[in-house]
Length: 403
Image (cartoon, rainbow, N blue to C red):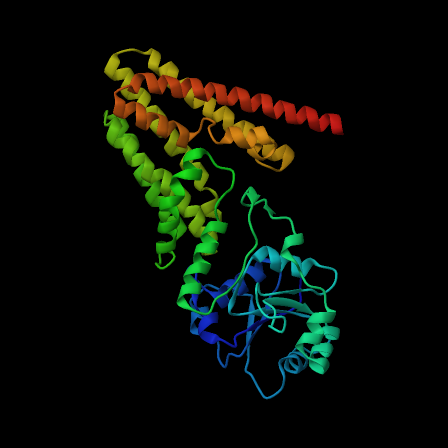
């Protein structure tokens, strides 16, 4: 979409409030830039806000200020934009779900997005305006324009988010006070949560993850720095396992599990996703297998029983095969294997993967059952890859039958 965007900065402090570690006006610009908009007018600003100069706005985004004057807003917009006059207007004091901005831009006709629970004569949170809507607004007033133009109703939209692999409620929040700034940040953090999770990541990890992300949003620490720290800690835990410090290592593994969720949430909340960050799962893979290898080595050397190499090897090979099944499912269905059916979503809660193995080992190591629990992890890894293989085959057969 090549139409220009106008960000209304009638409340300049609110527009510059740090929501999720990013000024609200900068967040609007970055989200709209991702959706193809390159020209931005800041209505109500007399100069380019300093916060924008510090927010790493894309270099080819064209920013211009549009100071207020004595003319009504629609008249000023019409005069400033010129023919054909179509534009996207976004309130600078509202946090808006970027999926709703996509909807406004993709609709065949202009729509407007209301502020929840606001009076009917309230300026919309966002609106796509043609010259016709601008003329109507200028001649008959705000209420007449809103009455004669279609409204974008979130309750009619599909809440499924491919990026989060599940249902994510839409949000539109006015941000005018410190309390609403914090509430908006918490909303962004909750919205950044992946939906297809195992039980530890669903019930336990978010308790600390969300608090850490909220705190890190107020710092200069980047998601890549969090990933680096997580990787270093992960390899340090592998060293502990190698030298037989199983209880200490598995206790610290909880910190790795939490931090592994923090970097992704932080990147999505602060809009700091990067190509390097997308490779974070590769680092996770090597850290995870360093753990399995280190535990295997310790058990094999401490017992002088070479069969532990086979047990550890089967665990690691099963995990690799399981990752290949996920990759195959993604390539064919463009979805994670866990999203293909009710059984798959339910099995994800307990399927063999790092978090599940870590909690099994936590109980087993502290109970003194290190050998038995590692064998149990290997058996569960084999069961998991068999079930995932059967389920992928089932979905492929179903797809073939439909075709």
